[in-house]
Amino acid sequence: MDNQQPKKKVLSCIQPTGTPTLGNYFGALKNWKLMGEECDAAFAVADLHAITVRQDPKEFKKQIMQMYALLLALGLDEQNNIVFVQSHVPEHSQLAWILNCYTQFGEMSRMTQFKDKSIKHADNVNVGLFSYPVLMAADILLYKADYVPVGVDQKQHLEITRDIAERFNGIYGNVFTVPEPYIGKKGAKITSLQDPTKKMSKSDTNTKSFISILDKPETIVKKMKSAVTDSEACVRFDEENKPGVSNLMTIYSCCTGASFEEIENEFASKGYGDFKQKVGEAVVEELRPVQQEMERIMKDEKYIKERMAQNAEIASRIAHRTLEKVMKKIGYVQI
Ligand code: TRP
Image 1: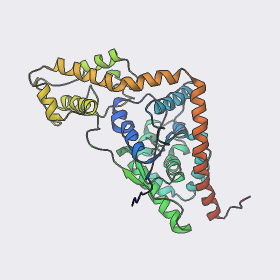
Image 2: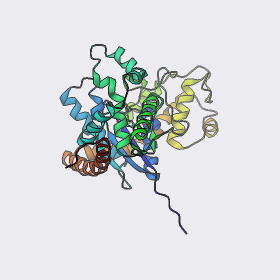
Image 3: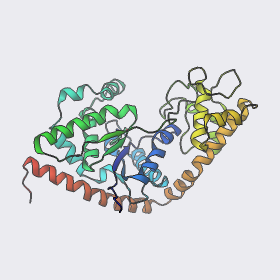
Image 4: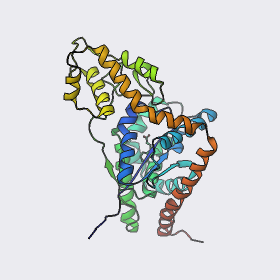
């Protein structure tokens, strides 16, 4: 007899600010694809979150289109998964307001990202920046996600989501699914090519320190060739003493599936020049299908908008059901 369990639900969102790096790709996006194959998944472009920092209108629109196209190019909407734009589903803002009233000022003041960002953007410490995690809670709770893949920087926000959900359930009965964090598999942490003790970041002022998913093949190889290593001239995994080489080995392993031992053997009698060249080529091959698909999709704005509209409708149907239930529990008059 088959006892098919219903698929677990996952949700994650990405802000449309800047092109993701190779670090974002191996740390998050590639795992999203795998999760989408096993779970019932929803992925969104978090464009409402993005305005907590001032955006240039023209550039912002371009970024939203591009990020959405990228999610399609990665095939995230295959197998009945949905890929949508947050601002196309008004229930996110509606639930966020409601949840604001079930969230304490004190608990939000403890959010480390808020503290960091208010220092970084001292001239624009807006209330949206403060209640940002509540909007994130709304994203997650609307879709009854069982799991949310998050990096360390978002873990605290997921914890507050759980607190808000439990608090609401405590008052009104079981309305929300309390989500669990999903921490990705090992080997996914990619560091800067110029300072391998730091995370690879798209906002780094030195563009040689990161590879953008859309970098041209020759740029990728060039950046790899100028990656910082060490003077031992031996391809060997040792994160503490050889962070640069270890980072390149991690990247190579992510691209080819080879183990560190296999990589050490492959390059046993070769210099760093050969090694870096090979890592560069492996990255180019890994990104080629995504880049080609992306190029194809970006040419067709009408197609992108059609997909946005179809997906928004499906997302809205799910979100609306949850919102209605919440409003009914609180005592709002249904018409
Ligand atoms: N805050 C997340 C980030 O910047 C993006 C995000 C918005 C998100 N809503 C979410 C992530 C819901 C997971 C679930 O990375």
